[in-house]
Image 1 (cartoon, rainbow over the protein chains, first blue to last red):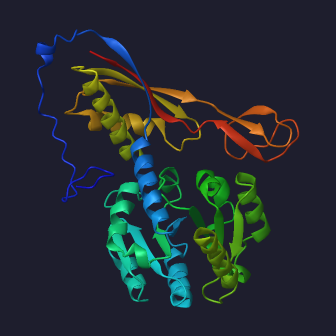
Image 2: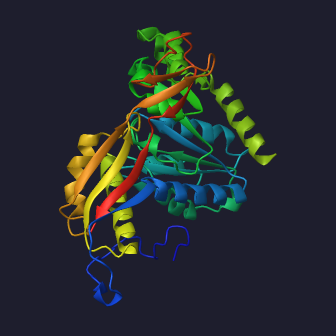
Image 3: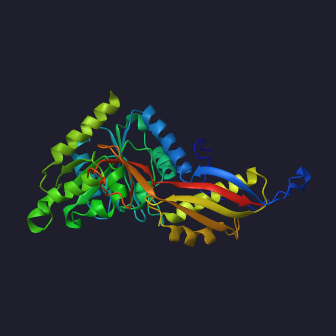
Length: 250
Length: 113
């Protein structure tokens, strides 16, 4: 029985509502009445996210939630990062996709513990999935938990997973106006990685305009341009990662 | 389509509250929805009937109250309404503003029997 979410060992939540108690013995007046509720609809997710956050904090974990459209290069950024830093930093990776374990297989090939969460029809990861997903790792031996969210710039913005920061990945083939088209996500992110910059000579992508759009949505957003293919900018990303981890450990 | 999960949460919260209040039936649920909440009202309405079937909410009405977004300029402190996240202060033109409302996603009240 999970204390935080109340779900049993089998993860299906069958709340059968057929036990209609007859309350006539309590003499409850059957009158039409208004009840004030004032409850946040995402309260349950937010509560589970807080439980995740407390769990991660107990282990001094840095937790990043990578969000982007499909195909922006999240998995490649992870593969590259893990290959470079895995001897220095203890990583674990949660992979979210609707179907297949392809991404978790790619991460596992680097030798870093990985677990795939298949959301089925779901368009985002939620705090419940991440809480149970993290049970697959030895958190005591982990410094950084990377969560690769489902490729989607809309829905994951609303669901707190208990992470320290959202990292939005935008590849230069997508067009520089993505921050304007999906402002919620870029507003919620601490860092934006502009990926695949080795392709810039072949595209009409204006880096400066893209940075400006992102800052108009989120004046505090940090921005790093990089390419896993040429290696350009990766050192800045690694520096950012090490600095966040150092903050966490201090 | 995260509106499906959100609608399921609405039904879950409303049904729990109704049972706590020993109600037999939910007649309507009023939801406050900020214009920048990222949730499409039509999609909520679309999911509501399917999600409420077989619960105390079956046959009930979903009432959506839209909440307009407002922000306060960080530079000149003026408060102003905004239609989208990308908005500049109408006075000083600054793009830095703190959102005061518009992200609500809350069950306000419900009518039960």
